[in-house]
Image 1 (cartoon, rainbow, N blue to C red):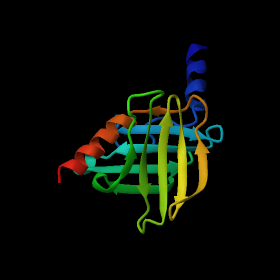
Image 2: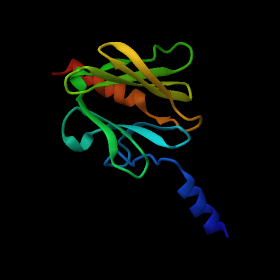
Image 3: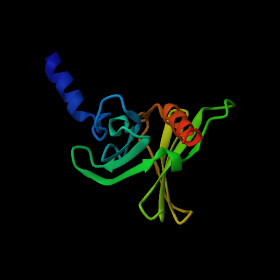
Image 4: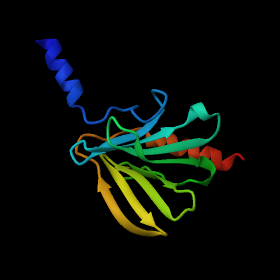
Length: 149
């Protein structure tokens, strides 16, 4: 009975951290949208032997709908200044820089803002309780990559 209940709970989980990121522990942000129908993960791509971060937007259990791979030296970020509620963001760009995907957190909330040539065209807010992040660690790595060529 207990095993059945645990198995049901595991199967009901909309997206598991690490579903997109290749190596456990490299996830710096993950959440679901639309009651678990979609998910996003941001990874610190340490397996790539470079200062790379990746972004995957996907339906849980399927191949990513959108994958972005950006060098940290060119990423934009917003860092918490230590006052008020914690917040932060990192931005990923597509190959021709026409679209930007800003992944953000504020306290326990998070989401994605989509910009086309600098104008916001969409905003997705993560499902309540689905945000897990260590985005501050990624922001520190981005800062370090930008300071040391």
